[in-house]
Length: 425
Image 1 (spheres, rainbow, N blue to C red):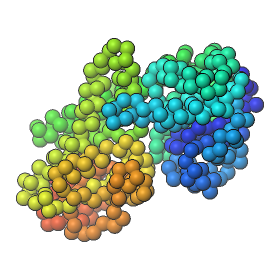
Image 2 (image 1 turned 180 degrees about the horizontal axis):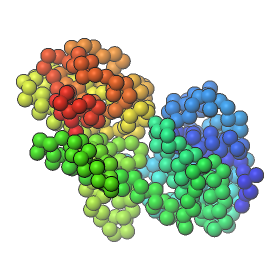
Image 3 (image 1 turned 90 degrees about the vertical axis):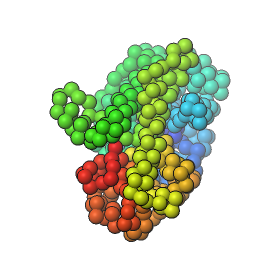
């Protein structure tokens, strides 16, 4: 087991999770950030982070941090932290390809005494069932004899400038008592909020996956209430404001549920539950309901347009916002695309406007090329889908100026008073 004074770190994966880790560790220890994307490496070498998670000035000041795509440069490292995506496939099953690939990469550099820590969200048991065998096979070493593992789930909240990596309590764990203490001390050296040492890797894995499952189920409840209140002609936000005056009422809001965590993690847990013979009911019901919201929003807008006598077949709709949340460029698993797809199913032309989005990335991921400029008098409908600051600062007069004489403005995020728009969630 390594002493902290001898630590040489390698962070595998330099996205929203891996880069902040590499930066914080690079302030204290010799650290190498490894990623297969040469464009990402070139960008970081130039001192720029397109995810906006790390300010350029801070990135340029970290002297002990280097970036590479060359596996030969990481063989001197003795602690490897894996922070790659764990998405789902088209059938909503866990897709372990990035994690398996990262494990094979680490295995090629693994030596006796090394420690491998995983941060990627998985179901309980995945680290030791999926990753460890690949490490053993690729290195020829024996788990918990020659090398050791830990699990410390990521808790990064993209675009959140208040809750940053050092200020969020970190769950830690290890494959042996000694490893657990080492991993905990390692993270304590960069996490000012402190750490929570879990009793096992499985407990740490389970704790992570239920964090977002709990949020998902709660949001599903609020979304269902919104559907009910819409039929009762009651404003959901007003109901929630009234109910929120009770001290123990949880402040969840209705909306689209996307992103790399909340809309994905529950499927990891339900997959494992079904594997061991239990069919989850509440979790999957919540997932189905949340996945339905894009269809509901689009169909509601179309109905309102028809009631106003708008010819939908010859109309153009503006969807404002494409990222999965406000004030960040993260497009992963955005559910705004559900709204766009539903409009397209009806043969309605759609423009997408999002000043936070990289146009090439949007086209590569979703075949969507956002418009750069908004033309007045163009749209028969507007959907405010994401609460970017730029949109929150727009008045209803500005929005109406983009529309034709007869139009529908639907406010998913309640950026405007309900009496100023034609519908809201």
